[in-house]
Length: 131
Image: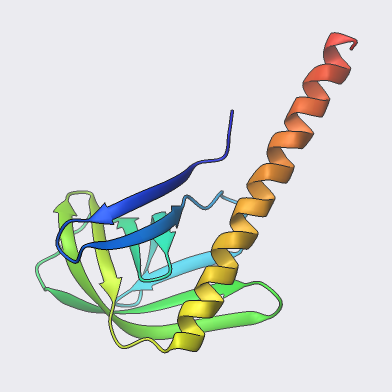
């Protein structure tokens, strides 16, 4: 199975985003209004997440924490642009170009880990099948 990498054109903003679905062991987490949520996918300018509670506001404060070459925490508002409970998507508001660059590095690292996992699984299959 190939790593999941999506290219999404957001019809509302006409912006192309490279999105990655983080694996459970990828070093990234998201808190929305102080509540830890599951990340569905992430791009340099936004994130989709799952939340079972009631979501009424248009904008929520978030903390995106991740590790690449070092530990990062990005605090910013998230403007919700899609609501399909229990999944929500939003765009980061007011993040710096440096934050965008750091998130892009995270996305590339997640893609590299996915490729390594895939290669390891394929090698294990070959080993078990006697190839």
